[in-house]
Structures are given as C-alpha cells and as structure tokens.
Length: 603
Image (tube, rainbow, N blue to C red; front, side, top):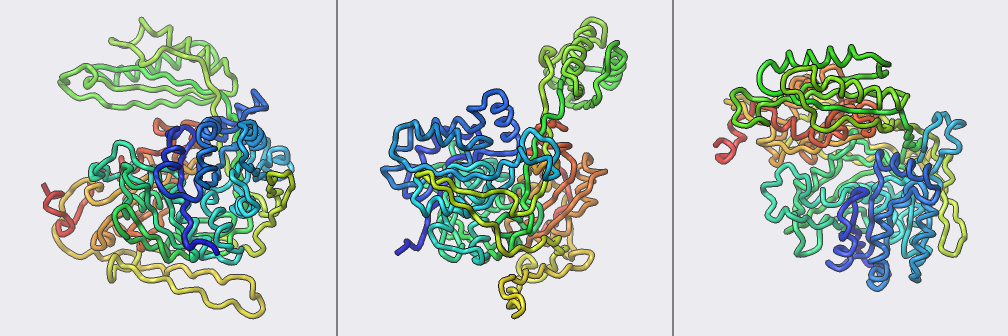
C-alpha cells in the first residue's frame, strides 16, 4: 500500500547553487525523493562548449561532487535522487556515478538531444538542440527501482512530477493531478527562491541569512503543501510561494510535455507556520509540439566601461564616443553605447560624482571585437576627456551565445529510459494533445474578494471523442477597465503594496507582480496595462507587451518581448537575465489609494 503522501525536496536551483545543500536536505528531516535542477539556457551553452572541447564532459560536475559525499547517505535513508545534471552528456555522468563504487542503481533518461538531426528538423545548425522531455521517463525509471535518475533536458517541473507519477500510479489522463504536481515542481525547482530567497519583502523574513531548501508534500489528487525542514532559515508563506509561482511564466496556460497547467485555477492557503497548501489546480491535454532549446555561438563580444567624473558629463561622453568611433581599423558589426548617470551634483565622494559610459562590440571576427576594439580604447588614454579612466583594463573578445526556441512534434524525440541493468524502455508521447489557445482573460471584474470567480469544470467529452478532454474555458474578458472606487490617492513606490519577481525566457523578460490583500488586487489589476508598463519602464516603449491577470493568486504577469535580445548569453543589457527588472518597476512611483495604505506604509 502506497503512503498517502510523497515528500519531494530540492537541493539545487541552478548550476553553482549551494554545494552543501544535498547533505542539508538528507540530514534535516523526512524525505522520499531529492531533486536537483542544474540547467538553464545559459548553462546549456556553457556545457555544450565544454563538451566541444572535451567529449568526456558536458554535465554538471558539482552534482558529482555532491554524490561523492552524499550518495551512500541517501541510500541509507532510502531517499532517491532525480536530477537533470546530465546536461548535454548524460551518459558520461551516469558512467562517472557508477565509478563511485556504491551499490546505487542508476538509470538514464535520454532522447532530448536532437543536435545531430537539427538540420532535417528545421532547427538550423546550432551548437546544441535539446527537446524538453516530460516526466514519464523519470517515472518509469523509479518504478523499475532506480536509486538515481539522471536526465538531460527535461522540463524543470518534471523532476517533481516524475516521482509523483511513479508513487501514485497516475496515467496520461490524470491531467488535474499532473497539473497540480507541475505547480508544486515549478515552486520548488529554483531552490531557496521558494523559501524567502530573492523575495521582494525580504525585510519581513525573520531569518534570511541562509534559507532552507523547499519540500513539496504531494498527495494523490495532485494537491500539495510547500514547506521546508524544521529549524532551517528563510520562510514559506503565501507570499514566497506566489513569488516563485509567477517566476518566468508566460500566461495562464503553462504548457508542458505531459499537461498544460492552468495557473488561473491555483489556490494558495497558509496551512501553518512554513506550510502553504496548493489546491484546485486544473490541467488540459498538452500541446502537440515540444519546445526545443537551440543554442548557438553567435560571434564575439567585448565591452569597455569608462568613468566620467564631475562636470560636463554629457560632453565628455560625446567626445569619447566620437574619438572611439573615428579610430582607424575595422569597425565591429554591432556597437552599442549606454550612459549611466549615477553622478550627483556637489558630491561628497568621487564615486558619487561619477557616471559610467559603456561601449559593447559584437562581431563574427574575434580579432575585430578583440584586438582592434581594445587598441582603440588604449590609444585614447592620454588624449580624451579630463579624468579619463576605465573600470577594468581592455581585454580580449569572448564568444557570446544566442538562444532560440524551436518546436518539434511530440513523437520526434526518442524518449527512452536506460535502466540500471542496461535494458532500454521506450516512452510513448502523449496520446491526446490540444493545441494551445491564447488565454482570453482580460482585467477581472472587481466583485467579491479580489474579484475572484471560480472557473467552471469542463463539460463531459462527447461520445464521438471520449478520450479527448474538453479544455477548461478561460474567464470571459472583462470590460475596458476595473473600477477601484473613488477616493484620495498618494504618489508612492509601486512596491509599497506590490511584490515582484522577474526573469528571462529566451529574449523575453517576465515580471510577475502580486499583492497580499484582496482589497488591493482590483487596484493592481487596473493599474498594470501596456501603457503603464511603457511609462514606468521606458526601455520597453517600442516592444510588444503581454499582460495576464491571475486573480486567484492576486497576481498580474507581464511579458516584454525582445527586451533581452537573443537571450541571456547575448548580454543585450547590463542585467541580461532581467533579474532586477521587477525591483526597478517596484521602485517607480504610482498613485495608490489612501484606503489601501497602512499606517506604516503612510509614514
């Protein structure tokens, strides 16, 4: 008989996360499965370059270090480990784990690597092309007795969903349960970001020094409780869970290989100290295509930042730019300039009197972006504006990456499990799929608590197509505006009431905003429009903006298309992953109804 609850923990949110976290999670309390997420778009490029230099590499080496110290401990405690640390070379990592000399049964999930077939699949000629596989391969590996499951590219949430499928025996048609586990997996996949790390209201966390890593307690129906080990730092609250829930999502339909999760059905409840319950999540059949991460070396990049101090900042910047661009030699294919006016008048320190002028060059030729670029800067050292100096010496060019998302039919990748005994099991794709429809929800109607209205359950499928689930209907679009009510306002930072978390998805930036009180949500939902975002974040003025309102969790999601150029490795802006974009937005001043302000916020 299966236990009614499955405890799935996380010990890594990225390649480079806290190394002792695996031991901390194994010794800190009860656990059934321990997951680790080591992959991101930039990581895939880094690991791809590693493998190009040395075919025996291409996986997350820190995971192997963790296992060297902790694998026997995990076996003793009966905790199974699932990680995507295989990167672009999962077989090499499996071989390295087996060389540790433990009796662990290690399984490999493979099939994500489409690089050899990229051309015929219309994906170009990337350095790497890796499909986002789902959770059923992980589930089969665990069901067959694996102690450690190593994957390459799977969706981050699959690391949690796979163990839940194996434990509860879910099938492809258990869409609501799969969607519930997907939400739990999304919340814990980034480690301490669910327990107070990078949290907008961090000053309210009692012990923020070393947040514990998160745990999802999963149940048969897909509901879960997010928590952490007793005595660890940080906090688990509706706020910390909401912050992670809106992180790097697109709209209310969160598509995956096994299920499309309806984020507009999520309900959160504080169920005790450091315990947040997630219920009500609904799922639809997954889309017919899988996303493919395509990474390419786009060329070479170089950067120089010079310091402009004191008077005539604009004139100094203009002189340096004219001199630099007039230098002899080949001009880079792309040159961008930015002037950060960090200076203040009559400053008490030199640093406070200084601005930063940055020039970035990109070119297919390493010499043009490297030696020629640096030479132009060096030669101006004694012949430019007064007070000339740079933050770092001129350096050579470095390769930069370009990320693009491709799509292939679900049946294209050969999704397989290589069990510990060498037998290979094929994983069939989802038998029923449903093309994604854009979420039609406009601003929610401001009635009841936070304007919330339950989404009706799907109607039974017709007799002619009994296996295809009827999609959950989106909320009906509301009118052109939300009425917040008359009354006086005060001009204050948006972050007085609203939290935010921001990040990257390819070249797009995502900002998730939320408020913590039902009464404040109609104000937030009415405030955040395309026009408002363009006014508050002038960088976005010419870019497409998409806004999704999620009244069930009092949140609004904003996607700015193209803000990050060709992705994080392209380094289009000084914050290439848009990690601080949400905090910038929170710092901008807006009109806030006085009725929503507490005494503390007013003063």
